[in-house]
Image (cartoon, rainbow, N blue to C red; front, side, top):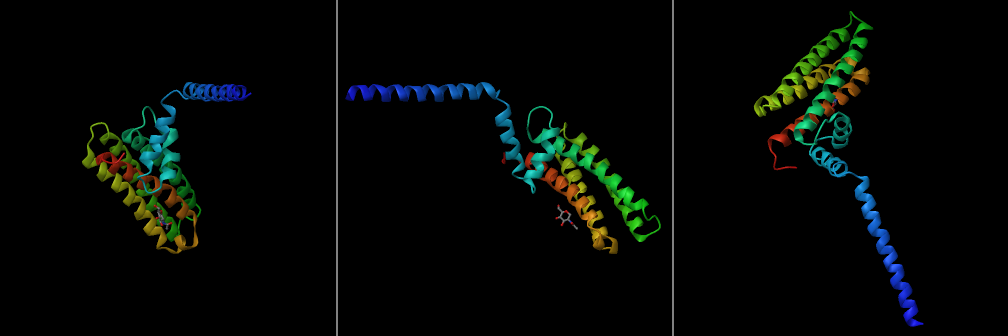
Length: 193
Ligand SMILES: *[C@@H]1O[C@H](CO)[C@@H](O)[C@H](O)[C@H]1NC(C)=O
């Protein structure tokens, strides 16, 4: 009797062992190597930015090829360019509502800053392949401060104090720009992952 029970236990154990082995086999065949580890690495890189979850969600759909600090930064710059174009169109609409006001003049200055950002993005993109870190850092910094210049102007005005839309637009741009600076710093000081 005792040995019968023992056999049953052994059979049960070997079934669960086989089941767990085949789970593993299935698991590895389902995820073809790259997907899981590289998804994990994007989070690793973004962990060092000021807004990590924003970093992951904005860059992930725009990354082409392998995930590394260079391709993440390229994706971040692409994201910033897309957002800057969208925000420029929004601010242009706001400005046209009331062309002669003080508000309209401030928004025109912001649009000029957005153009500065767009041109700076092109120079930053050009600095990535030759690893021109001096100019890259300069441009990433310049993008953050140009966005801040618009924000400071609007936040100090009557229009800015009574309108939260510009706060949202500021946030959507400056989070990506600050993250790009974080990714760039990480790329230049590669002791961090
Ligand atoms: C603009 O966005 C930044 C986020 O980087 C935030 O710290 C700042 O408070 C925002 N300014 C306004 C007026 O919302």
